[in-house]
Amino acid sequence: MRRVRYESTGGPLFLEEAPVPEPGPGELLVRCQAVGVTLPVVRKVTEAAEPIALGGEVAGEVVATGEGATRFRPGDRVTGMCFGHGYADFALLHEAMASPVPDDASAVDAIALVRSGLVAYGALEAARPAPGEAVLVTAAASGIGHLAVQLARTRGAARVVGAVSGPAKADFVRSLGADDCIQYADDTWGEPFDCVLDAVGGSLLSPALAALAPHGRLVAYSSGGGTIQAYDLLVGAKSVIGFQMALIARGRPDLYEQWREELWRLFAEGALKPAVHAEFALEDVAKAHEAIETRANLGKVVLRL
Image (cartoon, rainbow, N blue to C red; front, side, top):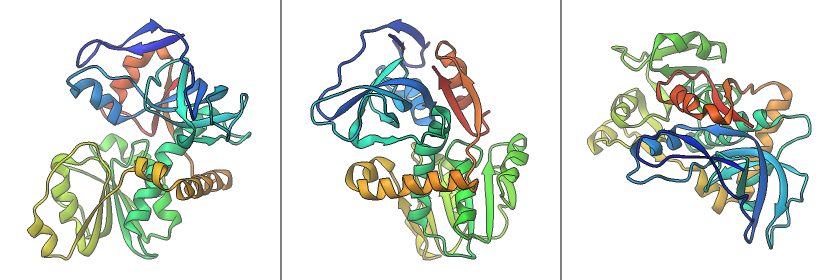
């Protein structure tokens, strides 16, 4: 089978031939039809001290199951998070991280909706915006952010604003139903917000916290790190909440399943419309990573196999 690999920090990425893996206990062997490209994986390629297996979101058909894997059978269509080699013709999914794909949805639909949608949904659950409150979403044009903008509206937010890196993304963000779109470098981010969902981190944490109204909640789910001052929390009685999807998937499978079903329901009703920026062939993986690195994407970036 084909598999993407690299040998040193920063790449280059290249295709190699590798044996098809055997599913271990509780694992599914999936013939990949689509693979999601995410910022955390791109960052690991450029920043990790040693080369890593390129994992991430995969969708495709189960072709074999390991011992103890009973929820799915060969022929079933699934999507889920692969922590090994996912940029490949075949990948291993632990059954707990897999979920079914409806018959009327494509593998690309699943990649664009499920994992990114679960993170967006979970971040909103952590923020718990009340009907009528104002929500700000950073990285609003990203695979997760563009779904968070739409989900905030379905939860009854009275004002939804997207924050992006540049003006080229503003029309896209507004087309999602956002009331406005701001840029990180703007002198002011407008009226205070009750909730901020931050997928950027780093130096953006401080202005994101400053954008909160008293008693506001900042949900941080970025891999970009960053620090804030405790005093900045105290003066406005503000809260910072960390969110990680893997903890939900492993520790609360019932909640994971409930959120997943709600995403597919909203998708079927047309209330949630995942956007795909571009589909790249596996051999064009470097171009897919470039779209993420340069923040050029409007929606999800997908490898199509």
